[in-house]
Image 1 (cartoon, rainbow, N blue to C red):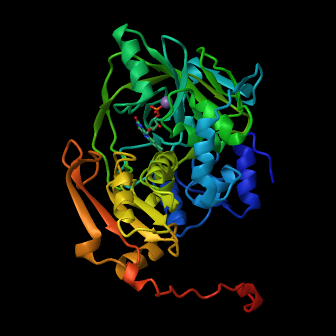
Image 2 (cartoon, protein in one colour; image 1 turned 90 degrees about the horizontal axis):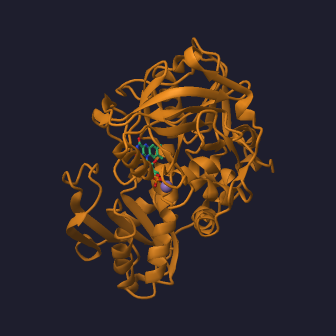
Image 3 (cartoon, rainbow, N blue to C red; image 1 turned 180 degrees about the vertical axis):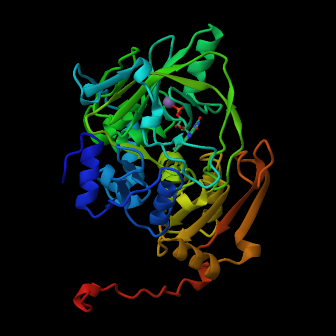
Length: 446
Ligand SMILES: Cc1cc2nc3c(=O)[nH]c(=O)nc-3n(C[C@H](O)[C@H](O)[C@H](O)COP(=O)(O)O)c2cc1C
Ligand SMILES: [Mn+2]
């Protein structure tokens, strides 16, 4: 097992596990890279390293955490143990370690030399509004007490040293910006690209301390951080690239649209802007990107951060829960629970509990333990075989969901649905047909 200290180590680990495909053919940052990443994901294939980018020297990677297998590799775990590992890390944070020298400082670009256009920043989906930094980790700090925070914020590139930065309500970075703006001050931030995947996973979490502590806990040792070049912020010492700068107070400009987590395009949005003051990067840096509306987007934003919450909530209601999953194809609106049912009413209680585990969860399917909740066709099989719609489906109208759910009103008010897809008690003698799986290589010469 390769020890992971940085993004490069993880790319090597993916390669060793046949989870990374390298493309030598020249590709265009406009739409072509996005389409290749999407096609690989649709065919459940590897992450990708583009070595030859038209008009650019820096290679690009994408689809890094688009699958459960690759997330398990990132966490040195197994797909079925991921939510447990997340829960453990959240309960046992480890402080990052400050170092004075760092690979990310090998090259520092400042002043007139700053030019974001020298970096291969893709325009991903066909109707995206332009090039976006999508896999960047925003590092921000509380101007009052200096506490740091990690999060994802999309950045629409608007010139050599300027991007938009979308900061939604209920974000820690929003609180920091509100406080800075109240004083008429700029907010210093840094954006790290190409990091240990535990940092990306931690950045998608809602945690009240520094998410770097969760990244360190996921890695099992302190992650090394170093002082930024232009501010007091601590940046990942082994990041491929860190873009430093500030958000000037009270500036709002249109940015977008971008493929949203709902699988629909978002709208143009009035967002703050990010003025770049320095770019630090390693020798021979690698750019990391991710597609909007991809499984990777969903995994980081909806699946990994919320499965531990879901598990906690439903396990509180019943000891008979075997596993939970928020599948990436459900945009975070769907939850699946498997249960060793002991009481006919148990699945409905669990569905109700799941709906309150996180506001986005709208549809809940409860299945027996003979159903693989990571296999959508198995879930649809249970839904087709074991559901009497009148008895097994219930609705809760006028509940609160997410306002971007196309089936909710502008405040997120919607109907939630619970589905008991467990076998009826009277049919307990029915047994699911399971053929043993064989190793085909023993029978077929490829
Ligand atoms: C790929 C991806 C893109 C995201 N884009 C944005 C964004 O543009 N603006 C935003 O405010 N949140 C965005 N989010 C959500 C936040 O990054 C996420 O909720 C994070 O946990 C917020 O951190 P906080 O709790 O420290 O504020 C995105 C999440 C992911 C995974
Ligand atoms: Mn936070």
